[in-house]
Amino acid sequence: MSARRIPGLTVLGCLVLMAALFASPAFAQTDVDVEILKGNQPDLVAYPGDVTTYTITMINNSTSVPADDLEFIDDLPEDGLGNSIFGTPFNVSNTHGVYSYDAGTNMITVSDVDLGPGESMTLSYDVVVVTPFEGDYTNTATVTFPPAWVFDSNTANNTASYVLSVLEPLKFPAKSSVQALVACRNESDQYHLIAGQMNGPILRSVPDGVFLGNRRWSTSVSGLPAENLVVNDLYVEQNATTGVADQVFAAVWGYDGLYRTEDCGRTWSVVDFPGMAQDTDPFKIVYAITRGPGGPAGYILYASADRGRIFRSLDRGVTWDMTMSLPAGSADTPFALAADPNVEGALYAGTFGNGIFRSYDYGELWERAGNANIPGEGGMHIFDLKFDPEATAGGHPATIWAATAEGVFLTQDQGDSWAERSNGLEITGNNGVTFVTKETRAITFAQPNTVDPRFEYSLFAAVWGAGIFKKDGDRYYTDWEGILLRNLDASALLVHNGALMVGTNGQGLFEVELSASSTANEYQDTEIPEGFVLQQNYPNPFNPTTSISFELPEATAVKLSVFDVLGREVAVLANGKLSAGSHAVTFDAAGFQSGMYIYQLETANYTLTRSMVLMK
Image 1 (cartoon, rainbow, N blue to C red):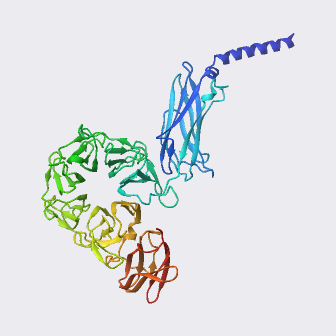
Image 2: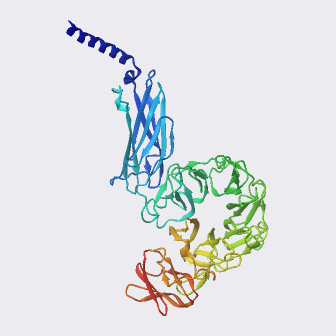
Image 3: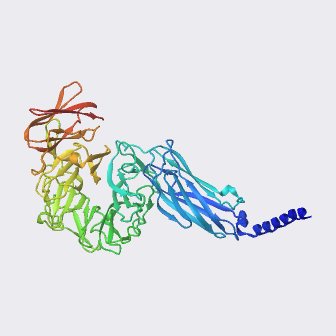
């Protein structure tokens, strides 16, 4: 009898235990439907260096039962070599559970997620595309359940994937015409260069160090007209917040006039200018953008448009209002703008054919400056205006520099009178004939000034038909010295990361290290080299000009010659006694055929030789 009672008690105990389990919340959770969703911004396509934002959402679709102790894993994609196509996730935002990232497995895990009935959680993060390999890459997020769960009633939505197409960037178009250049810092604190063309798409570069080899570029199309653009100006508003990209404005001829990007040119949006387009003339043209102090944001943005109109924004370019136009505005198109960095409301407009106008009340009222000493009684094209960054250098008051159709001018009395500083804006052709060319399209300042310790900055000028010129030393009184790109129509300048970017008309973009633009006329107190050194020319390959630098430990007679591959001397770049120190000369190969050339530095006791490649 006793032997038969034990099984009965065991069955009874099991029934009680099963009833308890059925009543427990853990077992009831087998009926919960957990859904996971995944997406990214801004689009399905990216280039190396682009920042992409991913968002994962997990939902408890039950209306009555909570879901506890959930976890999901986001498996980030890898290239064919087993390397992650992304850098470490940043700007992470997570609403539930515990976030972690394992660089070894290349996986993101969010654990200990508790979701009430109908509740959802969201994880978002930014990643930089670091792979140089083109292809379609999939990353997948998958829900995992705690051990007490037997099944999810709908497993079809427990996994979510997203495909990102990484495209190979291109070389800069060789025959393009570049009118504007800026550098934009993205969300991961890397820099894209943005180039606006005369008749083409806006281009954006892959950030430094992301792509092996020379700089590569992609086309900005999202949010812009499908047709080619004429970009008059680019302006970058730097954002001091880490993880937030700079803001860039593009002023264009026609279409909507002004566009803005907040992801360094990957996507663009139209900026609405109230009153820009009129019923009788819906055409929109924006010429230039600048900023000055004042306003609730600490600065004010100004933009110039056709018919002499000036707009301003007090909220970082989100909304704009029109101020008073320049006098006789239909004839005085404001081609260039500059705001005094130290005086609120002081604004200067350079016009196309009528000199300089100025306003002292944030653009409300305008007057024509005196424009004394400007040719044609001030009736001259003004292409660029810049305030000197060393406003008090050498005891000088605030100085405005103007790049004009008649050369470079400066004023120290708010435009009433001007002094020309065009000496040296000349070039000598291969036939030995020297001619003067003054039409200066852009000016910019760059550190360091290696010739005169009283000044921190050198001054560069982009001259139409003559290339790049430089003023070292006391820029108020020294002459210009031609350094690069002789005979090219230089049109835009940008100093970035120790290099000078030069946009040209029909010859694309050139990038030259600032150190390579130094000339032989160095300041006498510079450090004396320890030995004879012949540097590699820069750029190399080149077309048609390149800079050759060398160092002399003592004053001596030198000869720097260029030979073809047959050993024939084809050019003599220096021949005579030079002082000790660093020197640089420019070799112009406009009349030479493509191929390898040898350049040789010869002194009484030393002969140094290197090769270079001309590629047309």
